[in-house]
Amino acid sequence: MVKVLLLSGSPRAKGNTAQIMEECARVLQNHGVESEIMSLHGRSIEACTACGACSGTGECTIDDSLNEIIATLRTCQGFIIGAPVYFGTARGDVMNALQRIGMASRSSDRFLSRMVGGPIAVARRGGHTATLQGMLMFYLMNDMIVCGSTYWNMVFGRDPGEIWGDVEGMETIRRFAENVAFLVNRLHSTEEKRDIKY
Ligand SMILES: Cc1cc2nc3c(=O)[nH]c(=O)nc-3n(C[C@H](O)[C@H](O)[C@H](O)COP(=O)(O)O)c2cc1C
Image (cartoon, rainbow, N blue to C red; front, top):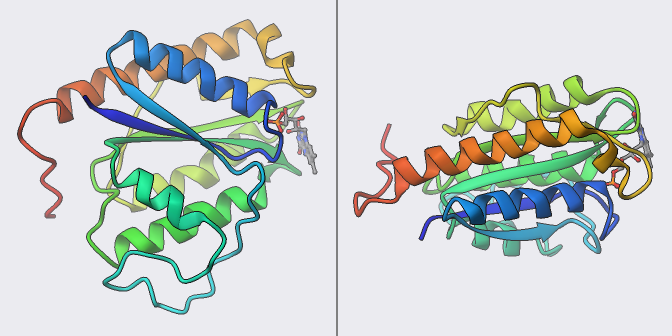
């Protein structure tokens, strides 16, 4: 069965981002796609130090549990990241994680190549589009396949649970998750493995 990693970038275990990841998991399951939800809650993800030690190994030398996320990603064919907007951009730990994951992939076997997915931004009022654009840079530079939806992947909400009041936002996310399932099933469900050579 094909599998998608859903990574919540919020420090809040049951916050809006986490709830959106659960909704994505439900949609994926309805379309025959397995998922695993991981969270940055309880983790403190440092910035890349440009040490270059991931070259060849694909593992990061910083001991802050990012390697657990990388190890899970290696078992997946899809990757969705959800980030709360902080001061108009993605929360710092989210970008730290994406940048280090990207370096680990690029400097080893390019495990991100042709993974299907995309980013989701959650905010009370503003900054969604800049946050999405920032996270898209990771996807587009790592040979990944990004899915669209009927609007940009942005949801409004401040306190945990407020996102359910954003009916259009949640519909957009459901359609995005359906599109990820649609693509990942067609691209990766055969015996033919991803051809990551480029
Ligand atoms: C430090 C900080 C900065 C924030 N900056 C913004 C912002 O720029 N724009 C906005 O609309 N909401 C902002 N928010 C609100 C969060 O994006 C919002 O509460 C979101 O739902 C949090 O997601 P979570 O429940 O998954 O943690 C900020 C919250 C915090 C804690």
